[in-house]
Image (cartoon, one colour):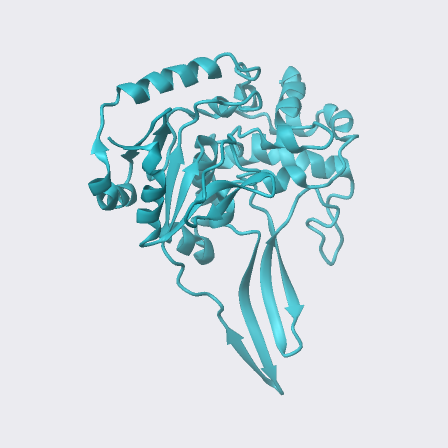
Length: 339
């Protein structure tokens, strides 16, 4: 394990950015978000960013292909370029886990080459939590906020930053940074971990569990009478899906440019009335059905097809951002009484 004084963290960032793009969570227009580091940019003190680090691998919008038409001839243009190497620094444990969930969607056959290219070139440096919030419940999904996943993991104390490599990518990064860092004892890290886990044990959602959703419960959950009352106040705004680090639904559209056609992919939301709309109609015509689809996917469909892994990482963004204070915890607790 290596460490560096917090007074030298800008030097650390500069060393990383000298060879590859560096993104850190910083304050921008009053909101914490991941931004490309520039000299003097400081990390935010906020626990987490408003939007997750998902954007680095599955961006909100991206061009897929262009068509240039001249007379009866059509030229197909691939807009992709090789992604530059980049480092995402300060990713929290919940977001770090979300990448493995997205991998199960985009890296299985047929592999999404756009996503795969970004994953290949990206290095994740996670940051352990020391002040988890009341909306956090990552532990419910087997995530340890004090010991995050990632290519490398950091712990920030009052005066130093400790870092350890977990993968070959992490080792490569630390080898480059080693000259400006020093070998460190793990005692301060273990002390912080102990305090963090003590806080986690006292949080309001400490006892929340999804264990009742395991096994053959699909029809019981799907046919529950609770969906009507749960979905009545839903605005269908899609906020929960856009801040969620594991939502992966998207739409593909064509845009006429005047000299051709550009095909692009953009995030979509199962909460929208035109989601899954086809020429033959829409199979989910009510907000109840759309609301049910979102939570069935997180709690039942995804784990049933992915070795029991849930489509949620307990980041708490939906708890803090939903305008009607509806979230996956409320839904799960309401439904589990019938299981």
